[in-house]
Amino acid sequence: MVKGYLSLSGNVSVRTTALAEDYVVAKMAKLVEEAQNSKSKTQRFIDKFAQYYTPITHPVLKAFTEVEYRERVFEQPFTSFV
Image (cartoon, rainbow, N blue to C red; front, top):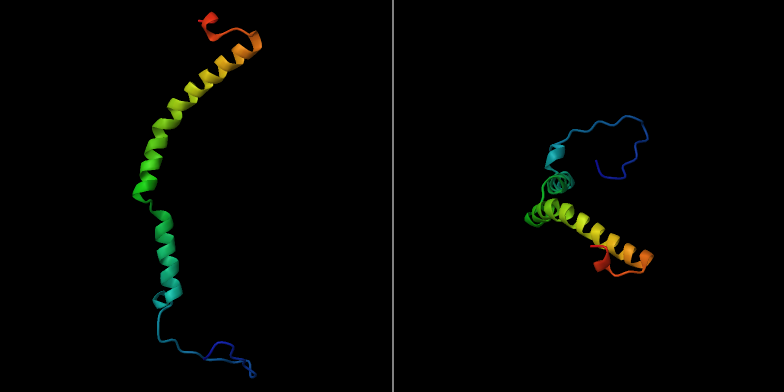
């Protein structure tokens, strides 16, 4: 049977000689799925780095923002708040 086959009688009998898993498209789909489920060394490093970086930088940046806010609102240098 060739692609684009048109059956005028309504009945078609086909015998396959290979499994669906053996086709190139099926192999490509399997490789893509495996790649999506596994992480590269770089991605693992970034995840580990972010695990520590984010909790440390968030309070530090919040403190800097608070200092800047107080200096602008009260129009005094930071040293007067300490």
